[in-house]
Length: 234
Image 1 (cartoon, one colour):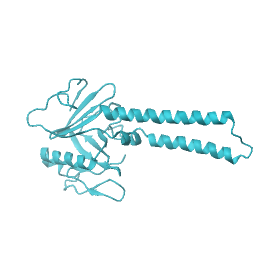
Image 2 (cartoon, rainbow, N blue to C red; image 1 turned 180 degrees about the vertical axis):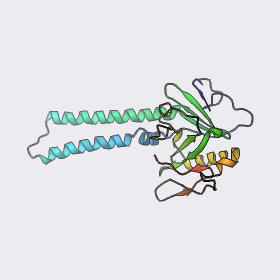
Image 3 (cartoon, one colour; image 1 turned 45 degrees about the horizontal axis):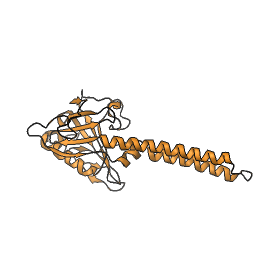
Image 4 (spheres, rainbow, N blue to C red; image 1 turned 90 degrees about the horizontal axis):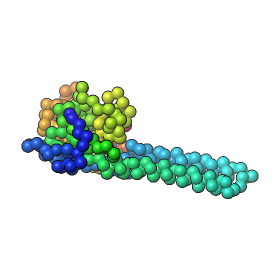
């Protein structure tokens, strides 16, 4: 596993150097900006928070018969609404920037994360450094694929965020986050791992063939492709 900090002149988009003989790109993609804004930057939660505050202020105003719509009251609502729109807009803009500057790559030998808005960094994660992968899909078709690294490989959580599995600070897990068609990408990764490391990728943790279930849309579990773990909670 290695890290590249400068790749302004990428020979291949998303990769700091040309692929060696025998290695091919199986998939490339970037996070979905809207899904990233909702789940990584919590823009929807912030919108709900401000919405509740505005509704409470309206309810208090109308519950008091003596209350009047003064200029100060109207100005307060305008200011609060403007601040809410500004905060949500900043989060959505950040999510868009992260989406546009991120490129995930899966080859037949490794996973590559090109991340960073201001300082771009590329993380090369060969299959031999990955202990297992998880998959979680959502109703909009997007999903997350976290990667558990074998010891002693480790990447600091704040070097990865938001491309890291939430709340795993002690043992950070790089994550392909909010990617479209996540189930298909998971299958591509599983098949690549099976072909490269057949003795590991096709087995579950107890040594038996992997037969667990995918966590996708509620009530719609799917069979996990070989090599992918379903123990994923974000």
